[in-house]
Image (tube, rainbow, N blue to C red):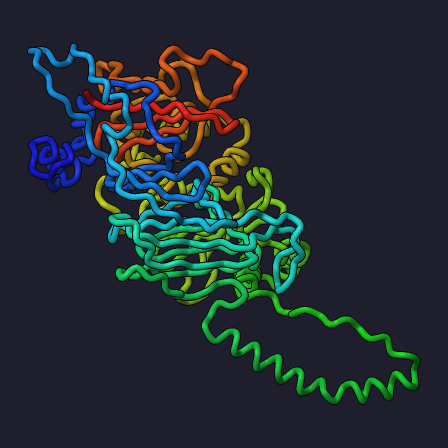
Length: 536
């Protein structure tokens, strides 16, 4: 099925990857209404690995060893067997069908983590152009680390974080980037965003956005660091200014000594830290001030407005720190600001936050929104695809349903909006998801809401674990006659016997073919139940 010269592969190539000009995307995808993963093999005999995801082109299945030391990469194949009967559909599958190796072939296993580090099993980004994979390893967090060297008080520290760039074809490590005594949120790739060949890494502890480029040769190259400085020569300018100030102050001790001798003993003040705000904070405050000033034409009203809206909240603005970042395009970043408590909280949705659009070339803030902004919500509702899909993504990545490209998703959003008791709270809840985690949605056609209807509380394109259910998850056709096309049931075929044990499920759908894995596991690191769902 995966050979480029067979009939199935050619049909997929024609119908799915390269629909003819003028053909509706969803019309081309109707092929998937009849090709479904409707057959399930329960409790497959498979290695005790932590399965992460398929790459977005479907060529690789990424997994990690249970001790979080090794990367194991598989290539999807397909179950094949001979049938001597006329009706092969009624024949039982051979015993080898219960084996994981019948569907996936291991390409290699690579040790990534050192003795003191562990692989972050929730972190993986795929650069499809060159088939590079970005992985992360880290040591344990230190929660009460002292804030030294300009670090933010209250943010934990990780002694060593290493990003590994691999060529997935053969597992060769091409480059590494190490961050020491820093804190980067690696869970679900929250602190890292990949856009084409550009990589943004957010240092929460030191409030820097590191912009790197992934070269075709496989090297990670520094482009810029945004935070303390915005322009390349900011540090030089501030250093020369500080040097000029220190030259002026050299004569001050003699003068002060004479005055203090006359007026009483001199109490020496402790050395003060850098009195300047960071470059990104200066840009933010300047934008807020200009916006408030431009709201009023009368000078008296302007002063009153500045007192009320800016000076009264000045310290709150100063205390804001960068939470998350995503690229909007190659020149603009969407930056989420909030409090220190919110940055390290497991549920940041309960903390107030702000959004800023930053132009990396001009180093200017060009927009600033509160978390309850009607304007930002309208932009998100109308143009949500701009928050999801990179510019050079393949055509099948455009199938990811959103309320700006899918009428059913839009109706669902508007239904939730109409049911909300408070529009302001609804907007906050919706915008809390911004910026999106990078590569956090599956492009599988079975999540296309123009084709199928399913319970999004149980399963969706979003890459996250869900509480397991003992009932099959139904996929029903959107088009009449709205028939049930297939079911996905995680866990054992007979269901869960011990209802007291909490179980979670994750679903790994192949982005192109009718193939999926459902992985059900407990919170106590017991072996997982792995089911394979495929088209027989």
